[in-house]
Length: 277
Ligand SMILES: C[S@@+](CC[C@H](N)C(=O)[O-])C[C@H]1O[C@@H](n2cnc3c(N)ncnc32)[C@H](O)[C@@H]1O
Image (cartoon, rainbow, N blue to C red; front, top):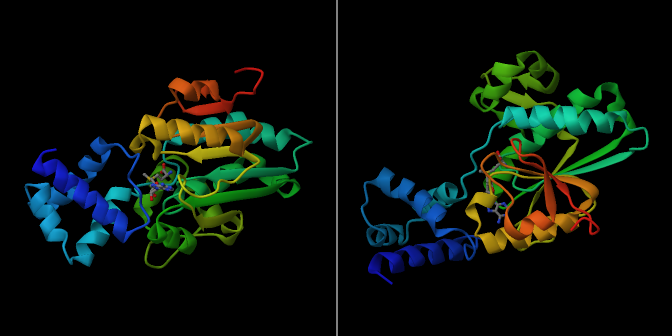
């Protein structure tokens, strides 16, 4: 190992000791890309120099953890995927007279924009029929700070950019605009969601799920970990359950024996039954 590789490993170990993160199966390439963001910001040119800078520097450690976990998200991120889900899953659910409950899991929910968007899309698809169905949306993430923002439910206008652009007319139904220009999510939406801290790798999973969202986290995981998690997701879903991944993520290898693609473009997958495998 070169001195720089050793310094890189030492930085990772230091982060793991200061947080609940475990990078064993995260891709080095992704972690290095995130680390470089900090190095550039500080005009530091080597991991060794950065490792020294990190010593007894809690402020930088917190910034580094935020940079590594990247909680970047948006309301209705990948708008066409939400439209696809609305027309192809949510509306048919609303018309199914035998459907009395729906369990949905947003498994890397960051600061809450994704689960709130799911709740809004469901309300738009169901209309008044929403009263007939008990809807539980579980929203989990490993990052405390993101979950605090999610619980608060107040967002700057820039996080609603997609909605402001595509469907501004629905915003007053689901948000109260504050005097300072921020948007506060209404209680009718908030009540549909339970936020909890969960590490997708180590903690217990939710089960009997109808739709599982795990978007923009898989890209950080090595193939073996992706496969292990896909196997668990298969188990977490009911027989005719669905999995939704992020726009640049895909199911390959062993994962294909657990899920089949419903929309290649929108990254929506259906659970394969044992008989199909
Ligand atoms: C880029 S955000 C994705 C947010 C949202 N799903 C979206 O697509 O807009 C990735 C999230 O994964 C979370 N995360 C990273 N490792 C995790 C783990 N092991 N378990 C649960 N969440 C994790 C991060 O804290 C971050 O909030």
